[in-house]
Length: 119
Image 1 (cartoon, rainbow, N blue to C red):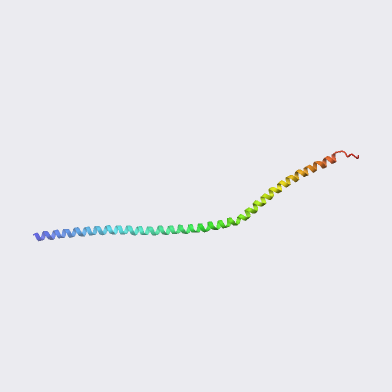
Image 2 (cartoon, rainbow, N blue to C red):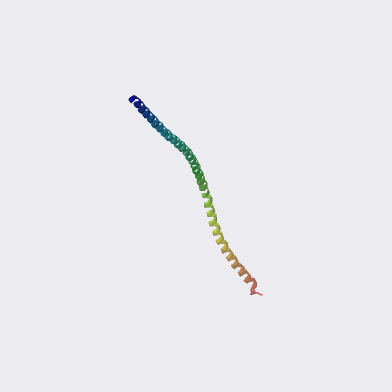
């Protein structure tokens, strides 16, 4: 009878260890699955950020091209500014000429409208 109790006790311990072993194995498998998922997510995020890096690099190149084009327009802007200054000077000259012509016109009118001293 004692031997039968020892066999039952040994069998119970064996079942206990088997159950604990199965439980630990399940926990480890769950952790392993979570780590695999995390790794896949990290790879996906890495690919996404790589795409953003490519976009950012493309934008940097585009901005450099725009800066270069902008610098090429500086010469034209300076020419336009010079033309604008010349136009302002021409307007001042034209205004002076207009006043002078008006003065001459009024003198000519006064000469034609005044009686001549010889008549």
